[in-house]
Image (cartoon, rainbow, N blue to C red; front, side, top):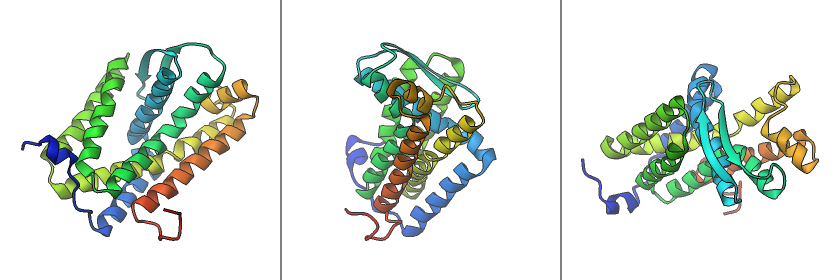
Amino acid sequence: MSVSLGDILAAQAQPPFGVVAGAALIALALVGVNTTWRVVRNAITIAHEGGHAAAAVLTGRRLRGIRLHSDTSGLTIMKGKPTGIGMAVTLLAGYATPSLLGIGGAALLDRGHIRLLLWLTILLLVPILIMIRNFYGLLLILATGAAVFAVSWYATGPWQALFAYTGVWFLLIGGVRPVVEVQLHRRRGSGMRSDPDQLAGITRLPGGFWVFVFLLWTVGSLLAGAYLLDLLPETALPR
């Protein structure tokens, strides 16, 4: 199968409501079931660490690399001042990015750009691949990119739609669970080096406040994405 630039940029027909709702249920199951979550959480970690890396570069920090681990944790290695607005923005970007990508994906799907979304996903993985500094991370990025490429190149339109909608729903729903998890770790005293606690050290606002900010953002993004994907009534959010 050959795909031209025109094919990538062209809008596709909106899938039936059943596909949109079915994709949401699949994503909910992937996030809600612990067995599958332990595997697919890697994708959220890619987005999380990619968000840290992008924010670090945009705020003038020197990015040294990204490490992704088999326990679904990650580490963005950078050099720069450990305090100030730049560091705060970099820390904020981690938990915010999966939901931000989900909203962006929902906006593209709302306009019928299913294939464009798939190719943009591959494009976004390239700079992360370049900055990966461990073998597991390399395998993870290559496997993720290969899966998206295979769907975008070989799958038929309906399967591309199901895959793309499931991916967007996964980012929107999956963006919420890590925020809940980090608060549970904090309550047990095992998350004191978490992003919220590092933000607390920089801003002097308590870590719980930043957890609330992340939760507000991720849940709000989920509702906004659901509206864009026509799973909420027209009166739910202003358009």
